[in-house]
Image (cartoon, rainbow, N blue to C red; front, side):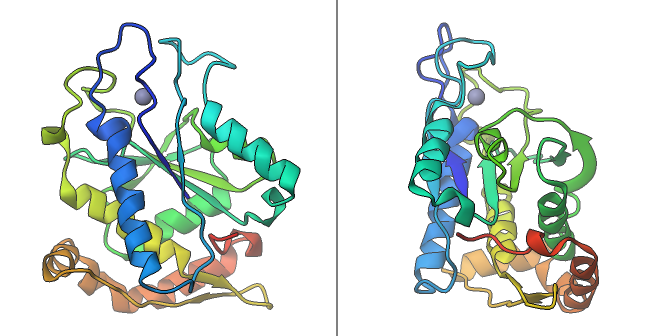
Length: 245
Ligand SMILES: [Zn+2]
């Protein structure tokens, strides 16, 4: 999994604060790490923070982008670890109050299906919407090397790359929704018969966290969701199953 660290400081002429791009995903990953660490290595997950995504030029222009992720992908390729990455989940710009996450066509379809199905069955279909988009982002450093990747991003924010990308734009609920979906997606475990086992064990660090999740519709959708999710997963490619390395 990956979040974006503050990548835009070098961009000429941009005076950007970066609360959403990319402070939001950094916050989500730190919270995901806090949850996973409490489960003592139950899931094999690496969390990475990339810098230098946009780097020097204002425009997204190859190869002046994705410095951090390209470096890491190359390094993991040389060490032989790259082939052990079963799925790569990128979160990037996920904090806005009206968060609307579209399905990125540059992401792996089966992994996309898995994340969006998880979100749907947790009751977040109003955030993880079934609409297309096409995003150039850090995930491509890994997808071009054959890793299954998915990008979770809302690029359609009016304050993007402006001094108005400030903390008041950020919704803690949006961060919680994305974190919850990522954590639940991690629990997909591939079985030998091309099926997938889902292990659900919600861990909340505080009563407020839990109440926030319940208020956002988790509880009502969860019980029948398991069977629906199982049915859907059965139709997906077996290789789509798990996020880990
Ligand atoms: Zn940016």
